[in-house]
Length: 256
Image (tube, rainbow, N blue to C red; front, side, top):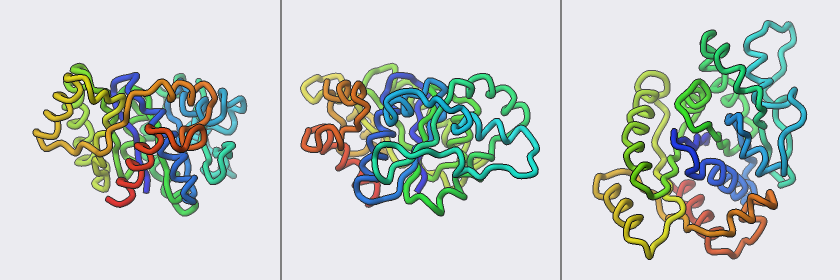
């Protein structure tokens, strides 16, 4: 199964959700890959403890190869590295993704990621794709390559307003490029159950029939510690409330 974690709004927890769900998949014995398409490289930092130094083994180099002719092209597995966590691999980000964007878009390389991940699906049970906070070449490539779309929602009115346009964009990709793509659900992040606004906003989404996933992910300072130590929650504190919510969310996705 290939999931894309997508929201055009920044700061909603895309990388946190991507890496933690992937770490849980790997911890449960599923061979798992994270693909980091955000030039900022937050997922890469989270899983490696820093940026990927070798530009030749990165998502940027994978896309750069698609712009060239080679008698012996590398396979997609050549752009994947191991993380410190057993069963969890990474196609890292690199800042040069930013400068490649225009070339890739003008040469219409939009289906190359889909082809690569279809090949890698023979090796991996789960693939999670982290995306930049924009509807651009990389996010479209990810939506075309994925089977399920997870949409982080951080319980504010700006996120709610942006959500409707985002859903329309996903539906357009479904109609024009990828009829296998399904909206797997809206992931409520940084939820504060004692505050009235988050409760009201989430309930309104439910009342509108939108696929809001359970459980909601609690707001916690522990996640900042997780980022700082470059240890997904399942490896930092398996008994923490947020970890248990992430595991329950992961298991609900697998059961769907």
